[in-house]
Amino acid sequence: MNSRPLSTTGHHWYEAERRRTTAAQVGATVIGWTLLLLGVMGFVPIFTPGFSGISFAGPDTTAELFGVFAVSVLSNLIHLLAGVLGLVMSWMVHPSRRYLLIGGVFFVLLALYGFLADAIGTDDLLPANVWTGLLHLALGIAMVVLGLVLSTRLPKESEARGEGDFGETGRGAAR
Image 1: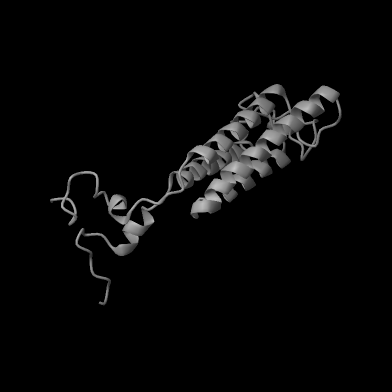
Image 2: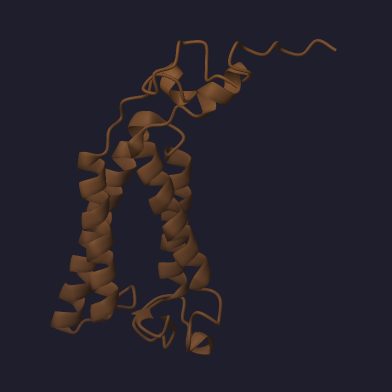
């Protein structure tokens, strides 16, 4: 068999490359999985009391995630889509930061839209209550802060393999 030879550290070349991720990519991954999980749980009756009264859109829904956050099919789909988008964008360095920034602004605007629609008393496209608005506001602010703070600098290949800052010789850790 002609397989690729092992490097001096005992890893294949693609293993070291795979570990080279930025902090922004990790942040986008965490947010993506969180939103995906929230979107899925919104469709599971165990986590969503009143699930039998869920509507596609609008304020008529009786479903509340964890008995607190008003959800509809549309809001769950938005969370699922945002989660999948976050996971896809986390594969790339700069798009992961853009996802955090733009997604954060989107969720802040979604929260403000919910607060405004609730205050005016108009029929909202998405179900909203105070807790849902606060969740979207906190999520949006957290995403923007993560997008601004987390680095997009790739670690050196030696750092990705675990060498570098540990006083090793450059040939890998002693075994």
